[in-house]
Image 1 (cartoon, rainbow, N blue to C red):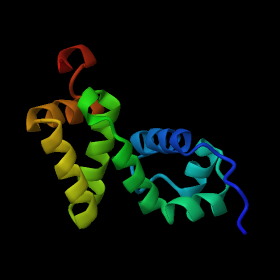
Image 2 (cartoon, helix red, strand yellow):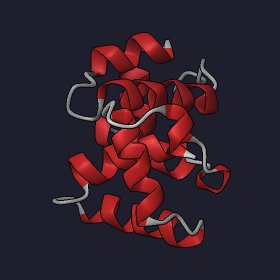
Image 3 (tube, helix red, strand yellow):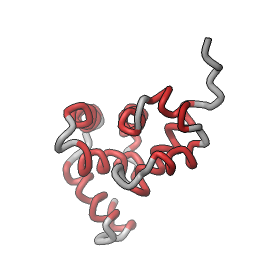
Image 4 (cartoon, rainbow, N blue to C red):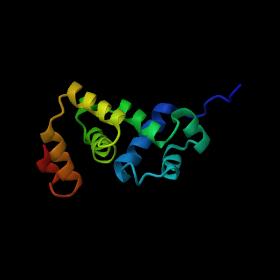
Length: 124
């Protein structure tokens, strides 16, 4: 019989989302995720399967309806780094965009803001 889980999954997913937003997918190492979540490597793999599995779980947890910058940032990471070659990510993001009426304009404004080409106050 396996040991009981010693972490709160929602908190770990939120911490992982922050890492992906800050570093992007490719630059977020498993070590970064372990440090941020406080979840041991074995537990991380046991629950999420892989870094990719954790990112999919982060996408599932995105509150896109809030329209928050954090939600859009996670979506942008997925669009830019994974969606071109990953059907599962592409489908999940398509669902998020459609279900929450997220427009190309919203994504474009947020992308420019993240890149430092648009001021925060101008992004509304």
